[in-house]
Length: 451
Image 1 (cartoon, rainbow, N blue to C red):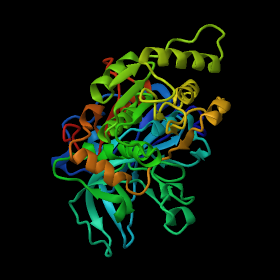
Image 2: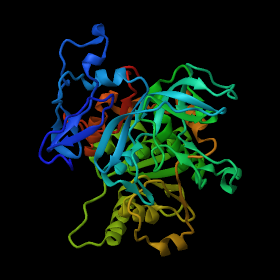
Image 3: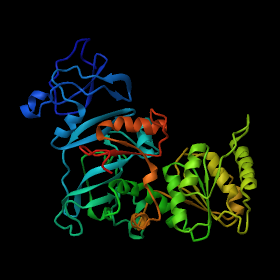
Image 4: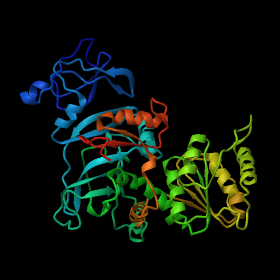
């Protein structure tokens, strides 16, 4: 740390969980046990094992005396422990003030939060397109919890209600909000999108009408999964307008791709094809919601992306019996991968006059076969987040048993292991080799086994 001149600075332990470097050693500031009532003090005064830090190979070893384990620290925080991204590969626990709410808002005690690909992207890159992390930001936006407090104008919710949170508050007065496309609002306050804080904290403030009560048969994990499911509902039911007995191809078998398959099946699609380059994901997709799967061939040496996509499309059509017209054609293509070759292949395999929906985010600029798109008169559409009716439909599909979210949750972590949860999601598998579909982080003082 600058200013230490090679000497260890004297530090007063603070009620914080921020990291600090002293002569190359990362410290985790914890509450001294001597500040707690005697009956609350642990018998051993040490950190419960090293905590890894993604910006360094050095473990966070507690070298200050009389320190508590991180789990004990977080349980003793009197306000709002939060998981904060400060910069690329630099995350810390911080104590934040409990948010004040307005008359039409509620305060939610967050219980379950899923890790989204966008959270990981901010961690490793510090930006997504024009959204750049410039100041410390609480991560997370796929969340559920219990109502802790309600504003005086809120009459539909009360403390203790279990809710799923739609994490995007809009202005409600702009042209897009008024015409029912509020996901396009230029002033949307979206959780964990710079500069706005996310939901990986004990408390989160949100407009009351963006909280949806969970039916008794749904768990809090189901509630957290409503956010990615709503993304799929928006793409397949809202933007694409899928009809019963139509055929669908979904590129990408990650969480959103799998949920797009599930929505297509719930809405009565006759043929549902999952495409991915990972065989194990295709196996899961077939068991979960797909009627068929397709594993693309590997590119040939010096083959251009477009040439590969044309060859891939021909192979896919031959193997699966896909035609450009008639009952064997593909009515809807959804890309949930963001991969350039998937987008190109999808345009080629779609039927004439069919629909193509882009929901996956990848490179900002790609090459597409524009003439093919033109002469087929494809309805080429983008799908961004979710809009009016998407959360209610998602809740209805799950509560009626038409979509099962439980198989998608493969990893569960306590709040104190948020770093491990992000590292596992980034790697695509945990240390035991188990592949990740969706990792869920429990709120402070909540057991991962409490679903």
